[in-house]
Image (cartoon, rainbow, N blue to C red; front, side):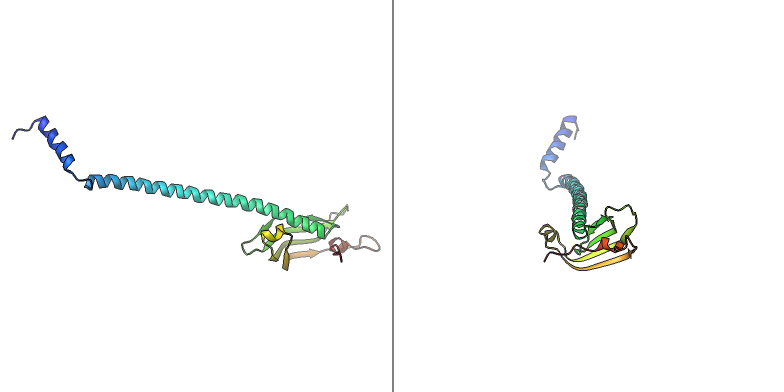
Length: 171
């Protein structure tokens, strides 16, 4: 049999037409296409996870800043004679609020000494965000770590501890 260019082209084209759609070449193309899709899905999933983590961190940072303002405002209301300073305020997953580097000084005084300091204050109780918003906080326990209370006379009838005396509750 004599092979010509035309006869070879005809045989190749007839073999392509005769090959079923589930053939090896078609499956290989589908496999490469499916593998590319899987890589795309994994990449998009990773981007979504990273975006979620970043959004959560941004939310928690903003939430902790707002929480710090709420704690600061409440302390100023309870201790009106004190100048309050706070480090960081964070709420743990357990609902516990941790205040770091709490310091209370005499308000309107030139004396730079702190009357009360605590490295860490842990507050437990009914302290969820809805309780804070509704002003329905119920404190069950306050734990102080590395706390120090300094006492010195301010005048003949006053002591530094009067700075950290809470404002009396109205009857």
